[in-house]
Length: 328
Image (cartoon, rainbow, N blue to C red; front, top):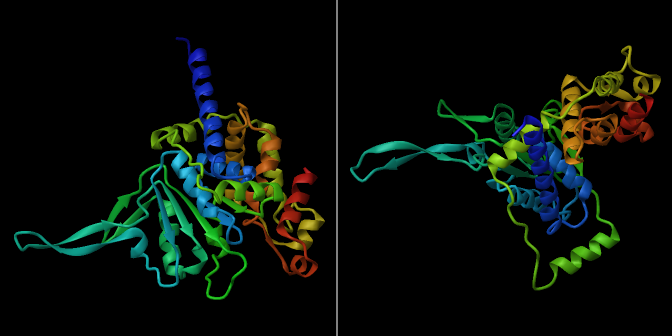
């Protein structure tokens, strides 16, 4: 079998898997097609994701359904003010064996899974947040001086409730930058909400079926790296990111007036990776500027910091990003 035929068959298998993932997810999740696509992009890029939305928008159901469809080990961690780092990474417990010997035995925490839902991450103190963020960055945990690797794929989807601030611990901007995507989930349309009522308030509710496993997800993630990134797309990414940095050569007057801090080099990396992943999901062998524009909001909205002028005039970070995309 020639290399071209083998490559064509592999590409066909990848697109078939993507189609089945969408179909199975759609059996449970009504609407939210853009959000599902953004979650898939984040997962294909091995990037952690922050989900922001008011209660009741199926954030937990989204992540658990995606984990089930992909055949991944899923764990949900409910973050509370009294949650300790050992509640996440695990701890050593003194055990007594049958012969009376006493030894410390490591009991793994819920972090040892493929897909982690960190529910309401801003409700736990910074010490516990840091334990999770360290695992996200290093793909390992250290307990009692011993380092243990986390299995691949390892993705964290963290949720935040934007309407309550009392008793919460907002993530600093430097820690927000560790998240590949920042996704905002909005209310469903009236038609979608009608379908939600019909699907979920009767005797029968559809359930998704697993169509992949951890190895299959790893193959999809590897296939994303084979998507081409033309020089023109790289140039557009660089112009967009450099244009977000106030008082530099690439910044315009609007950015100088309304941006406190622009996006760093990690934003350029994330834009490139996300554009590749979205191209794969769309069945394209090369990423284009259209893909970069489609992924810019979730990549940049937590990496560009508006200043006091923007806050005073009601200019949102989404408006700044839109201006950046249209100037190039």
